[in-house]
Length: 95
Image (tube, rainbow, N blue to C red; front, side):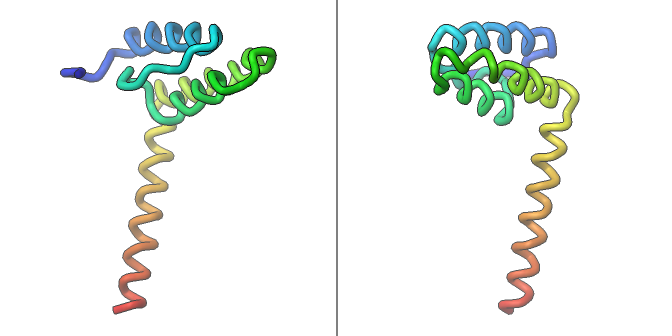
């Protein structure tokens, strides 16, 4: 169990370790501090055919860059807000 969020430097170390792990045919670990977008990109590599794995690495780097710059979290919050507003409208229409 983590008691704090990893620093950017720690995230970079974790990221590179997970990249090596999935390129070698392993699955990504959970509870690493990597966000959902990055984890999904790691899983895409882990479940790809060995010959196709390296072609997916640029998408993984883009996902991780989004974690570091906050754009993944911003997109997630925007989507959550849209879902909430949609639910509010439906309740208003039903009530």
